[in-house]
Length: 357
Image (cartoon, rainbow, N blue to C red; front, top):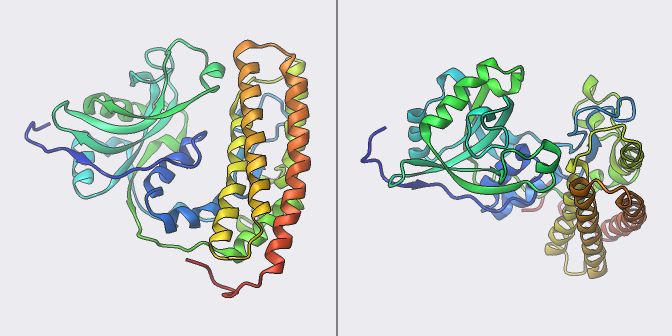
């Protein structure tokens, strides 16, 4: 790579959600645009179980997730690049043209990865710049402080950080996905943000809140006939899966992981953001609803911390306390959602059928 290339640093911000990088990395790109940041919120209201935990307690640990109701293309132009065509030079040209590189790679070859040198597994990162003095890419990825830690303990506290990565190291890691079983790693993407492409949709927001409260399978609205969701639990019903998971943990009959508790905690932040966005458009919005949302967020944070202590220590006495807090959260959330819907019903939508900017 030529040494006379200047520094490049495309803007990134702090994403609202960091547990899963397939959410965190695009949100980092969109975080600096308030309109896009607000319009993305509808992608994080629905919560669902993507795998049949209650049929297989050893299913994929990513069994709790947000259901994206709108495709990423609403906010980002995407150009797919096959792994064999990804090179340091291509990424440099993309950065110079104002494009971010969302890169899938084999963790075995990346020095900052927990799997470096001992485990071939697919992963992803965001390239947002180049440091000419250090001859390194600026990337956003999880920082794995101890490469020898086991996977369960790594999941207790993933840290999304700005990291310097050698271009040749990244190129090698990308090319190596050829030997992985994961089909999703075969393509990387170049992203170009769309300026304020969509608006905060009040009508859709209300529908999604109602779906969540009544455990309606929102996926049936957006992905009808998709067999992937056949055994999914949606909305408030996901609490059944959480109680079942805690029971299986107590019996040593499942994989211990922080992921579902971290996602649950982040989801309560959604209610704070949605309430604040609604209040921005309504001077009469009940501030008590916002305070109730913040109570949920705080309780979610306590649940995450308690789950982390269990994962790190393996001490089962944390599990009854964890279940009690989640039952409290379920009760408080149900009351909050009813109050939020009452608030929305009390305030007419001045622009029914469209969206607020």
